[in-house]
Amino acid sequence: MMRNREIVCPGCAAVNRTPADKPAGAGKRGRCGNALFNGRPLDADAAMFEHQTRRPAVPMLVTA
Image (cartoon, rainbow, N blue to C red; front, top):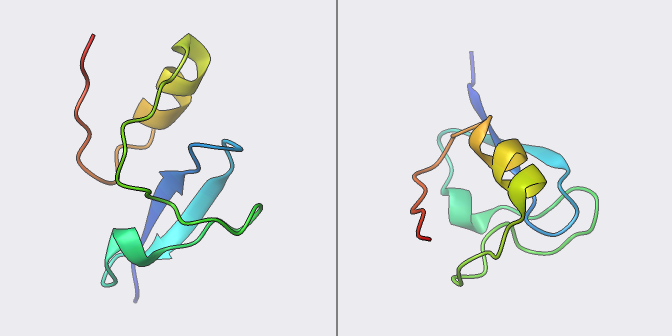
């Protein structure tokens, strides 16, 4: 059985399922079609931070 990761889109906040055996950086957003990762930090408000950290499928670096 193939396992999936759930990665939250940093732009539209949609949850995207990507195969666990594929590089996460290669994924595209299902709703808006952009790349899931752009190589830059994400400025997130409290609601987006909560949404992102509920599904920690990939490592995350948090700074204040």
